[in-house]
Amino acid sequence: MASAQPAIRVNGVSHQFGEPGEARYVQALLDTSLDVTRGELLCLIGPSGCGKSTLLGIMGGLFAPTTGAVAVAGKPVRGPMPRDLAFVFQESALFPWNTVRENVMLGMTFQGVAKAERGARARRALEAVGLIDFAEHYPGQLSGGMRQRAALARALSLETDILLMDEPFGALDEQTRMVLGEDLSVLLSRSNKTIVFVTHSLGEAVFLADRVAVFSARPGTIKQIIVVDEPHPRKPSFMTAPKFHALRDQLYGLLHDEIRKAMSETTQPRRRYGQTGPAETDGERV
Image (cartoon, rainbow, N blue to C red; front, side):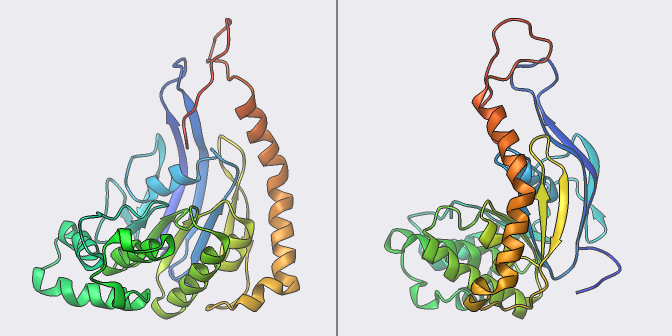
C-alpha cells in the first residue's frame, strides 16, 4: 500500500462560506492537511457540520478551497476530474425511467467512454456489486440497499483509481449497512482502489477503514488519525473482537467533547460577526 506519491494530498486547506459580517458566514474548515495513501480506505468522522463533506467536495474539485491546495496523483485539483475519481453520495440519484444498466452506462456517457466499451464495463461493474441479474430492472423495483449497489456500480464503471463516498449507506437500515460494508471491504481487497469515506458511524468507520481521520467541531481540523491494523476483506467476526471495541471506544473518547461543542453551537442562536443586536441562526450544512 506504500507509495512515494500519495493518491490525494491535502495541504493547509481552509474553507469558508460567505464573508465575515454576512448572516450566513461559516468557517467550515481550518488549516487541514492530510495525505491519502494509494490503495487505502480512509474514513472521515466528526461531529455534524465539522466540514467532512466540504473536504470531500474540495478533494473532488466540486469547489475550490478558500486557502490551501489539493493534488490528486500529483496533479493540482482545479475542477472536477472524472477520469481520476468518482463520487458515491448518500442518495443513489438514479433516473427512475432508466434501467439499472442504463443508469450505470449514463455515467460513462458523461465521462466520454466510447459507446462500444460501455456495455462491457457496465457488466463488470454490476457483477462486482452482485446486481447483474437485476440489470434490466428499474430503480423503483429495487430495495434501498440494491439502489445503493447500483450507484456504486455506476462509480465503479468509470474505472477511476479513487472513489469519494459521502455517507453512502447513511439512509439504510443497520443490517443492510453491515452487508454493504462487508462487500466494500471485499472490493477494496480485490481492486486496490483508494477510497475516502465520510461517515457518522463509529462502528462503520472501524470496520471499513485502514485509517480514521477524526475531526474537531467546526471549524473542522484533524484532531487525530487512528490506524486500524486489520487486513481486508474483513469478516463479521471482527465486530466482536476486542480490538474492534477498543478502537471504537477510542474514537468515542476523541469525539465526545467535540460533539458536545457542536451541539452547543447548534442549540444556541449564532451571533453575526460584529453584531450587537438579536442573534441569528444559520442552517448551513457543511
